[in-house]
Length: 202
Image 1 (spheres, rainbow, N blue to C red):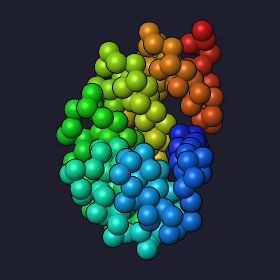
Image 2 (spheres, rainbow, N blue to C red):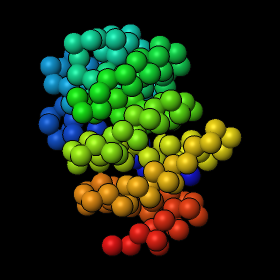
Image 3 (cartoon, one colour):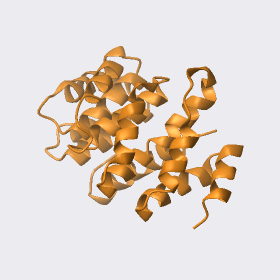
Image 4 (cartoon, rainbow, N blue to C red):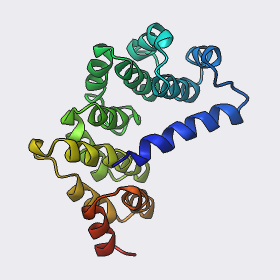
């Protein structure tokens, strides 16, 4: 199975930068890491990690460790760093899990990124996010379900039940949460995904 959320996030990051007059070559992305706008920093970090730009390791490490930076930008920079083979990235992602889920998207994004790195430690954070009364937070939590499902596929021994979390998201009273879960399940090539969609048609 492929991760439908990760691919979509990378496309969205590229489009956001281009639509706002930002370049997406190496120099432009490195410059965006110094932007005062966290959304530019996060988008640039996402692309630098996806493209394996080892020249970005030092500036990514700076953003990931910057306590003054917005948590979402730190999460994306830490994940990019981890993708470049720097163990400090995963450590910084785990540190972000300690932040409250209603403060920023950072802890939830960190949980999803850790799952992509074969680390299930963000699971309780995702569970808290899904239970949060704020629809936006619950939706961001639902976006982390695909990497958890893929982790379960790779490592069935860890006792993770991502499909049960999908069922909770599909039953969420806020349509945007259920819609996010459905969109992922429609792209996941797994029998449990098809079963859940059949059981939770709206």
